[in-house]
Length: 124
Image 1 (spheres, rainbow, N blue to C red):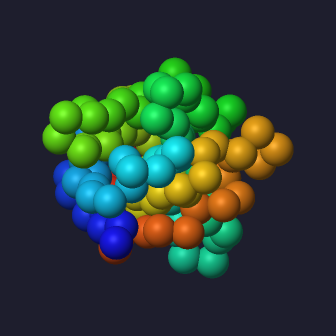
Image 2: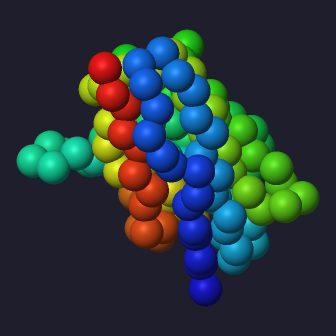
């Protein structure tokens, strides 16, 4: 059984930084792809960053440079370091896993295990 739990959300001012964590279990037995998504009310959920078991990184093009994904394999924990945050980064951030590797065709398409989400609010 796959379990994902996000922590680290909160409120920051424009230009601030946050680190999100996702404590996971069960996914490392697979050829996994694990990553972060975000969603705001009325908008489609969007992929932020992902990493596979070989350490290959995938980022949403618009976020390159401000967000960094990493994992602590020994602790089954995924991180998302966010810097220079902007009000448009305000969203619920979700950790998610795809047990069949990161898709080359559409890296955001096949995630089917999700955490409960953590709110990030950036004020101007």
